[in-house]
Image (cartoon, rainbow, N blue to C red):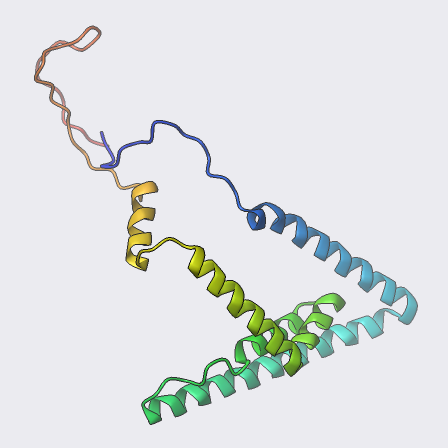
Length: 187
């Protein structure tokens, strides 16, 4: 049976990027830092204070996300009515990210979320993200998005199996079964 795609002559694993290699380590360090900081604050101010801080962060984050989402929806509505495209940026995405960071339990994530709510920080982060994305797109090879999907399909078959039978016309080789009727291929 064949899969319709040729198997590569070697089965070397693709190289992982730096992000893929160090992201799990970074998340683990961040979680340990959050837990450690919560225990330090709980020891100094009490457990009820930490609980109230976490609840306040969750409530504030949900309010921020709701307001940013409402603002983004209004911008989209106005653009559709006017026949144009929505205002570029606006900081809604970064405000939503800041709200999400506020909702995540922990003091470090709350501090980062509060920083993302400040307009100068939003402008700096959006400029940095835009430059990085522009640089990555320029470094990418020419082609369309459809070509990228076609290449991904060629290198990673989707696992579909096409049932079939190989018929040799050059005669039996050493170790082949004798010619004759063969049973049908079934699961």
